[in-house]
Image (cartoon, rainbow, N blue to C red; front, side, top):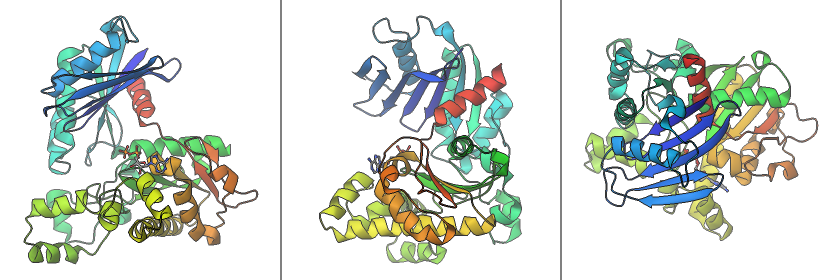
Length: 395
Ligand code: ADP
């Protein structure tokens, strides 16, 4: 059985065709700049990479091009579109409606649309992708929500200390994101440690362009650093994360910013980019730091300090921790960032093996011999999780 996994952004589409017998990705691709000039599709298989520069005016055309690439006699991996048995979609916000993946029908689409007020950039794009797919493929479709895994958080963790009526009226609360990734790496951590997940207290650090920490007790999310939106918590590539909310109104007043302008500042020009004035990419920041750039150095220090503070907080929230997981672009590859974070955590019983920690992008227990709390590097695989959850529902 082959499952098509789709992740639609406002102007992009990522796809993967997963063979469920082997759980291998047969092909993967990215359509960029949908609806903008110079749009293109990059399609990758074991045989290599092809790039197509085409006019891609909307998501429907993008989905069609992705499918054409998958069945192409030249660089395709299947001979007929009928070989695709189901489609799984990443949907960013499921609000309080979805605590697990669901088969998409009219009601589900309506609920996803209703959650658009909470994720105005993401949910409408996810829906467009779902509807484009419906017109092209005659298969069952499944929605897998970034927020679903965190629906097990207790109210003491998900409520904000605002007037309670705002929760009742607008559902203002912490939802959390990257749930698919936190769930996947927690299961892998249990396998790597050779212990049942329901005996473990884990802290998962998903450090990519967006970044969040999750406290996972017995396999369930009990707290996470992202909130109502993916802006809260850690310092990210371009997002500010935690700060005094009074600074927001102060800056708006002084800089004469509209709500949209302020949102842009907090989401797009803050984070390590805003501090360093250089880049949101840790490869650039590390290189600049090594050349003596003080602002790059400050940005990295602030970033690692914030992650360490959350790990300390979540160890307290769970009254202990067995393992700390590093995943996503920075977590999987950034040996220096991992070392700098773990330097704060000696008191917990974390100790890194320098040689193991120097490895990049592979699943490894990077702890020193005898460390009480294990430091694990686990490459995430959100697409495989989406494919598995899709299979479980359509089977
Ligand atoms: P996204 O959130 O977009 O899925 P990723 O998980 O792919 O992001 O993470 C992207 C980030 O990973 C890059 O911006 C970069 O900072 C970081 N990264 C990638 N490779 C390395 C590396 N070798 N060393 C340090 N950081 C890296």
